Length: 134
Image (cartoon, rainbow, N blue to C red):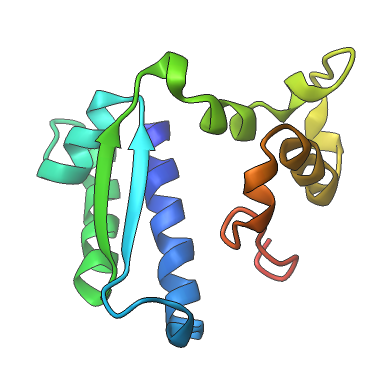
């Protein structure tokens, strides 16, 4: 469920950015997601689950997708190859020694740590949202 919600939050952020700055997108924008969780992929593509919590999350996703001009594709990536997502979701491992209390650090500091490890992320606008969005 957490991975599905991560995809949904990314979609909502991109949707809001598209509404605010449509000229910065190509004519037919598409959000491409890579995910190592087959249930999250199934929920996104087939929009069905037995889980009540999952069905409610799918309803939110469906509402945003119906209103959006942004297409989506989601592809499976092996967990061992999912280095970027692991770096973003576990910035505490970038500290020497590992710091389990990374929630006490400001977001900008954590983003800088992740950007040092994954240099290409520094240019991603969605990865580095403005302080107002946080």
